[in-house]
Image 1 (cartoon, protein in one colour):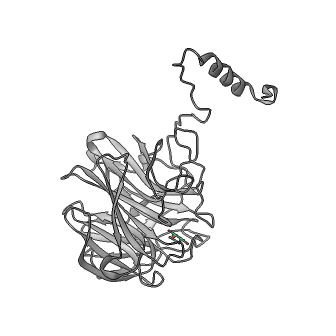
Image 2 (cartoon, helix red, strand yellow; image 1 turned 180 degrees about the vertical axis):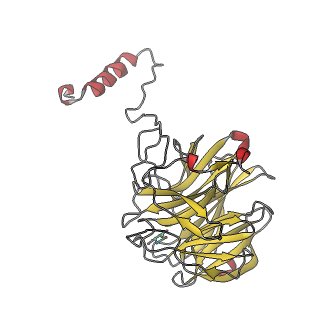
Image 3 (cartoon, helix red, strand yellow; image 1 turned 45 degrees about the vertical axis):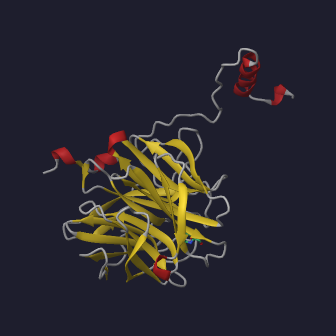
Length: 337
Ligand code: DGJ
């Protein structure tokens, strides 16, 4: 090897490696290792994990595990190996790569994984879009793990009550602990249906209704007894204007309320597609919009658009653009009046 063509750091690393031969125990940090020290969200910017690489965790969701005081972010790992990625964080800005927690293996299309924690059975349940490479299988899959960082093991996959299912949103009602999946249904994602999950969260029930919302990327929040459903239109990997709906029951009926993205000059949800709404614990009415900036394809380094969601005093959902923002925008629960 001609080491003269290498940079100083690389030559130093090789020297340390060579010295390590024989003494065996020297740990050489990967050159990619570069802990992050973010103190804000920068929607659409390149976002690195602790390994120095762009976070590869698309179409997913975030959960907070109180006993571990840790956030876990799950999503599609679109680099190799394909499957579900998991990242962990203490502050929502800085993320540690926990690896691929479910390898998709022979599954052709594995998209939009969503995880909930079953506190009764102490296990993590992941639902996901299971499909063939022409998106005609259109099923829901479910996997479980005893640990947040996997491995998750696939239990089964099928169409809920016989309906096609593609994009999914998962919502656990904080008051009842019942969980629901909103799924883009029927050919091709003509509508969204809502299905209630069984008490152990491992199967769908017959409580399954067409809520006549349109049509992909569903995210749900609940405030003051009102359910808000945010959806994208249906245009592949190209962003489009979003719509939100409200209902007093999760199973509907829902009323269309229009586009909540304010000042969105591109009319494309600030160049993003919704994937989840995360209620940030510890802050009053603090909702995090999680969106993917696919850039025309499901790329491993596609960016994320994370923005605060506001419910106005009149009950309207609004998203405003911030080039940079942090959690100080919200009111901490303890001082909230
Ligand atoms: C839009 C969906 O929201 C994505 O999850 C993905 O399925 C693409 N369509 C595929 O074209």
